[in-house]
Length: 251
Image (cartoon, rainbow, N blue to C red; front, top):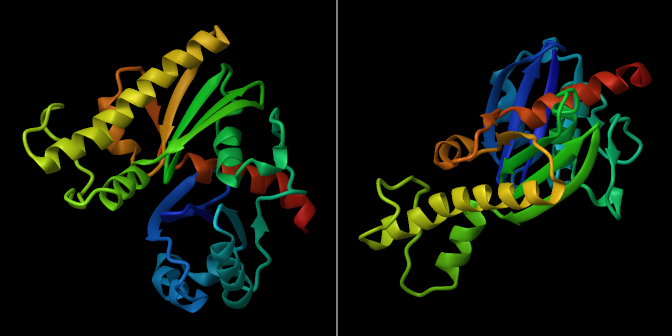
């Protein structure tokens, strides 16, 4: 079994793979104050250590990367593959500074590279990433604040607005403070998604597939007008592909 980690600023998604597909997943909160041992206690019942033959990590949180590396080395006696410079991805990155591109963006792009059509991946994480992929190449990216960031900014910068749960209200126009805020961060993000899709279409002047992923994709997908598909495990799938490409080099 391959143990896969997708580390974001809000959540750590953990997947188990038989080298063919993602068999099961769990999600933990990203808490950099926790020790590697505390994380190990949270995850150890998800798999049998003796079944794990390799570990791969995609992370945008360096302090978490170190904790997972320690778990891999100390608890599983394995040296993990960590997405970064020197790792073979099979992907071209047409940006000004390719080394700045996050591991999660790379994994998202690799996951859709075999689709015989341009693809727009919309990753609804702590930040919302729009990744345009064509011919195994990242052609461009948009990054906007995610839902949780928007809520924290709204609550933190206003004296009377309460913290809220992320739920979709029944109506777009709210009639109380909580439903008004919930509308803003759910329907508002959906409207942003639709609006940026149209602007990207005008810029690239070609049709493309749209794939929604990330922690909030299940909540936002039904609110988006544009036709799309949802794949919550996209980063893990891309990470698995990258591991398999590098596996011969690791032996």
